[in-house]
Length: 470
Ligand code: AMP
Ligand code: ZN
Image 1 (tube, helix red, strand yellow):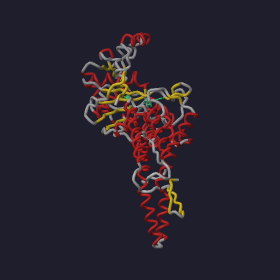
Image 2: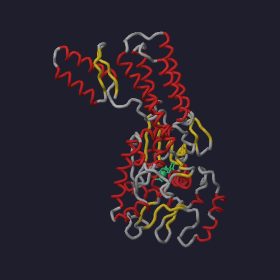
Image 3: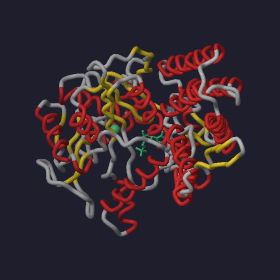
Image 4: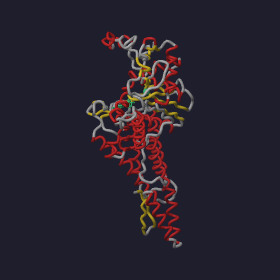
């Protein structure tokens, strides 16, 4: 597997710290409102990465936080006249609902910043002891950026450039107790009406960057395999996380840094502050959310992706094409003969396996989901042209299983409706036939109802019972 590593600026072969395992931290949302579809992009992308790595046999420890203390949360709480915990808890719940709709798996751990304050105080204390941080007279603690030699290594900025970028600000620095304009906040004093915690420096709350450094260390260890998020986080958030973690722990923080490109509208980044956004909830009113997932995966994760009604419509149609093919296969399976594979079918299954290899090859190349989806389409075309009512049950089931499996790796359900497997459906139909033969019509009707509930429609024909998925 090759991953484009923001740290080195090139695609690198992925080598895990521990054989067969992946430790991964993905920066999660700040929970003060419903998430927009830009926020959903990293969720979908890195969930797909996780699913793919799992399919290749890795044991993935996936940690993604909720930032539940922040100016925006406090502002929302003040506007509503409620506690900020009420806001954050409400939107964590809503975010989880959206994630479920998008088929984003629960993380191994979803830590919340407010439950990790002790760890933050501990890391900040270590940084002060080591001379990497200092407390200003008002109790604000800053990270001493100039002391960390590697500052800028992720965003590929050097100190001189940063100094000139901050030049104007430097002139006004000093009033806030900062030694240098580039120093950033680790702990800040509370303001009236804000949530706060006791600390050695003042009653206050942590800065945003320290939260992730602490949660990654606690749940994954001081050095992790992969750290990920949207590309807007490269600077300063991830740069600052590296500075804090490496200064405090004395070891590299993350071996690979993955960043997704922006979801845009009219080529402008979708964001709450610009007001050019759709929430995931908005989209769910018009589409099944798997269409949004399919749309996101249709582009390479590092490319910018423009959101438009036309592209969503074509995603909906593309997904439907795949589902229809699978539905047709199911219908054919319901009526197919149990016979050996013909030589053509043996070849046909080999061709299908070639598509699996191609799928893995493109996914191995820095998670090229766009090409992976094209491969699924090729496979579907192959299924549509080779499967028919003369095909053996073995062939039809084999090819269907491959389509379903590849879609499953992408977090998409190719099979609509029923959770029942084909074999289970056929067993139930057989039982219903037996019941009818022995004139147990009540039982026969019950089985029919059970199947109907699972989205299976039965058709009594002269040739026997046929079935299809609704
Ligand atoms: P936030 O709640 O703003 O901290 O964002 C949570 C995650 O969503 C971060 O990984 C951001 O980089 C990502 N994100 C926010 N807006 C966009 C966007 N328009 N496109 C892609 N990712 C985004
Ligand atoms: Zn973070």
